[in-house]
Structure formats: structure tokens, C-alpha cells
Amino acid sequence: MTVTGVYGTPPAELAEAPAGSIQFSPLIPGSGRLEDREEGALSAMVLLAPPGTVERRYTVALALRALAPGGVLTVLAPKDKGGSRLGKELKGFGCEVRETSRRHHRICECERPPQLAGIESALAEGAPRVDDGLGLWTQPGVFSWNRLDPGSALLKRNLPALSGKGADFGCGIGTLSRTILSSPKVTHLVMLDIDRRATEMAARNVQDSRAEIRWADVRSGLRLSGLDFVAMNPPFHDGGAEDQSLGQSFIRRAAESLRPGGVLWLVANRHLPYEGVLKPLFKRVTLRAEAAGYKVYEAQK
Image (tube, rainbow, N blue to C red):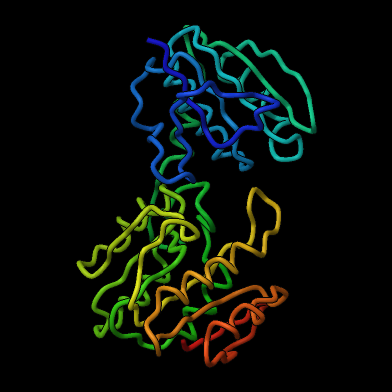
């Protein structure tokens, strides 16, 4: 049986995955885990490569491992986001590569060779691990995977002891959630992130019966209500480009999820114009801290 996989959303005009392809992106909730695919289970794979070198090599190595010998891998990326290195990396795995360029993308196609080279080191380098500096489980490719994001650090320093039931929108590996759950008055915390890898690391880092971890897109399909609090450091990049609508969507979802009198704690880059979204949705918006290019707001519904 022919089984084709797809990773991410490759532009159809550059490399179209056939209908019925199995999605494996950790950034699309509900997708399969490429890590769990048996060796040789796929006949073809179309992969929009991640920009980070370690994450990209790890993902390509997973795809090659999942392909049957002779199975076709099509992998592409913008030239300035790893595309210029794709051919060399594939050759390092023992592949014979055919390369083309279109619309600022490098597109590489190859068959899985009978013997793969260097795949185990790429898999080990991109796998989950405990970061000594963070003291937490993490994985390359997850947001701020090997350092504490300065915005989150500022929010952690200014967050009061919360109480009741709440949510951490875009919880990442669970750094902020650990701070929230340090308050014994918190009864339940929903932790949401669009990145499956982040939720898997969060499950290792936050082993608390009050925590409920969900792999979900905050912007769509969210069904929360009556919350006492929401805390978040919302994203403002999509595919590497700034997209202010992401944070604005997070703010609207928070307003919908909070009870009257509930509070939102938000950290954002100083230049992002979120006040215009906050003020119509909340009866009180207070700037609580400003440092290192970030602002922390408390907003009461």
C-alpha cells in the first residue's frame, strides 16, 4: 500500500502532497508523530523543512528513517531559512540529490538509499533532553528551548500568587506554569500550546495533578469559560514573519474564557500595539512592569 507523509504546509505550487497524505507536523494539532513511524513505513514524504539547523536535520533524519528503501523524499525550504544547506545535508545522509530553485526556495528530491549515513547522530542531537541551565526537559525547535525567554522572565518576576482555575496560553515547556502552580490557591490550570513537542516536555516538567495539558491552537476550537485567570506570553511570529494578529487573537480568546472580574496577565514586546485590543475587552488595563523591551499588563474583565 502506498502511504505518503507530509510535514508542514509546503506551497502546493512548489511541492504538492497528494490527497490523503498523513500530516506529521508537531505544529498542527492532531497530526501523527513522525518519531513513532516504523522504519520503511512510508513510500514518499513531502517536507517543508524547519529553519533551525538541529531541528531540520532531526526532522529530515526522521523522514528518511520512515521511508522504505527507494521511497522518495521531497524536502524544500526558503533559501535564507536553511534551503541553501539542504542539498549538502541530504548528501551527508548518503542521498543522491536532485536540486531545483523556484520562488526563493530550494527544492531537493532524493530516494532513500539502502544504507543511511549519520542518521543516528542527527536523531540524538535533535532529541528531547534535560537542559542544565534551565533544569527542565526541552527539545530543539520548541520556542526558547535552551534559554528563559526575557519576556517570560519578566512576567514570572511580576506575577502575583494566583488563585482558582486558570489557563496558561502558549505554555511552552511549562516554565510559567510551574510558577503559577507554586501558589496553593490555584485549583486547576489548563496548559495549552500549538507545539506537540512543547506539551510533551511540559508533561515531564509539570507533574502536578492540578495541571491539564492540551495540544491545541489557542486561536481556534478553544472551549474554556468561567476562568479566574489567564497568563500568557503570546507569539507574534508566524513562519518567521511578524504577525501581530496572533497576540490579538490570544487576547480575544482570554477575554472569552474569563469570568467577569477575572484577570489576564500578559507580557509582550514593547512595540506591539496591544492596548487597543485590551481596552475594549477589559474594564481595567494596568501596566505593571516595563523592562528590557517588554511590558507586563494586568487586565481585569
